[in-house]
Image 1 (cartoon, rainbow, N blue to C red):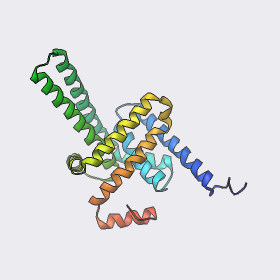
Image 2: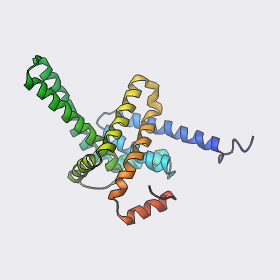
Image 3: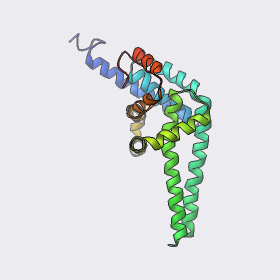
Image 4: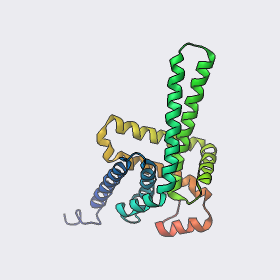
Length: 217
């Protein structure tokens, strides 16, 4: 029995991971409360899920705070821009809908605004993980994320489905707020890390292998 409850046993390691997932989800939720910090909190969520939970590097609070501070400025600016775009596009769809009717221009305008809204969402799912992983000017962040979004479109659609599914589950079952953010972030790392590695230098890949103690994807 002592072996089962030792800190190195699979049971205790599994419970530790579970508690880490809950703690990280709570941190993400708390740091999202000011609303304007949702971007920085999401970047920190991805950063911590990848570093601390997936690759066992550091402690949850330590990595979250590090990721939050390092990404705060860029993630906050980008989040405000993304949120404004989504708000404007959502209201454009509603305004066009007020006109009603079956005219081609009304239908065309609604399709355009909805399509643009989806594109913004697809770019957004790349932006916060990218900011968490790389250091670059905002202009380069946007350009690189749009490039990867288009080049890896099937993965982009999957990543958007993961994000939308995670949000839907949390909306449907509020208790999921205590674990689903981390689960969604971990699923996102499985998608984005195999994309990001293609744009890393061999030196950076070797450093990741050394830090993670395993082959980097």
